[in-house]
Image (cartoon, rainbow, N blue to C red):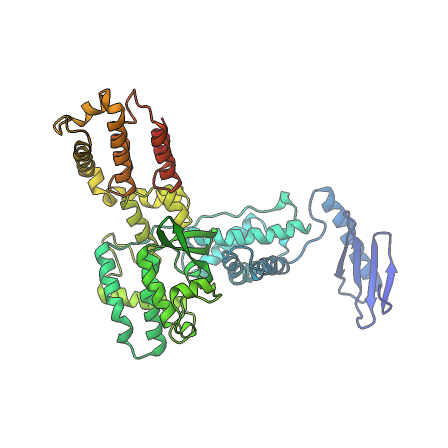
Length: 497
């Protein structure tokens, strides 16, 4: 100890210390793990200080025998450790973006309520009482997703406490979630999409406020990029930087790729071609990028935000949402035909709906959007009859079979007439040779071009026939289609036999 500290040895495991600048005694108690626990006795009397220190020592021994922590800390202090750990990871470029939400939950909800608690005293009743307090604070029952965020943040604090020996696993409470189940947000139809992007062309001219005009100018590009990438509105989109964009080369084709960082971590995605021009406009309105092209900005790997206004400021999330709501109100599109309110987040649902309508599998879509296939099935499976009316009515399949039948008739030798049924051709000996292979190749060509659905492809290949035997060329085409996420795993297995 320092020379300015007076120390009295009570026993092998208990010490009392007093600094020259303090009249009150500090106690040091050696715990079972060999560490020393320090605390103030809050008294100047040596006898009272000794009794307090010894009482803590014997209580700590009893707690150790019952598998309880020998010392504890106030929740606020433990929360600071957990918060600082997450912030350090974020500052170092690691961690997850969602850490920001956990830190907010700790600062706005957990510390204000649990701050004065000993972290070891938080039990099931305390969690129930916290839930009631949160409901009063919000003025409503919290959503399921909000409570999930709070519970995860609480677990981060409890993890910190357990690692430091301030709670044991045996007494650790298990957070509960009785929140309101999240419902899917409203989406837009293609016609509504057209109405919105046409109105956005001049929406920024309807105000004389520079900040509002700048926000609306960015809003035009922001909406089109959300609708054509499927990225999440908010943190995922607004944290996008020019260094996160790249050009992808595949044979003689070039595609725009992006890396976004969301609640599921960083993931790559490919933008539709319609998103390229909005990105170009974002380059043009950014005063710091004057004279540069999109290609030059991407090549330079600039560590600058994409969504910046003409004033050189990163656009504010609240301003985007507020102006988008005004636009929808102007067009009478705040609510959809299903009665659901639409927000900027609805563009993510619009993107998913269009891809599912095109026949893209949930497996491929989940990689693009950063959702599990289970989440996509839960939110969108109920919409599938309306997404693909042609498929469910049988018209698409009949049309595809007719198109395939006519194509086969045109590509096979002249001695085979077009009037011969396709089924009869498929079961003949000659159909299992070169002509059948040509038909299979044509079917895959139509499938790759998006003119044939997966179900029609499988019918055309005859995978359900007893005598179906795929050759090496067919296997290769199927594997290539699966690798490029055009063919589902189930479809691949059927083609491979």
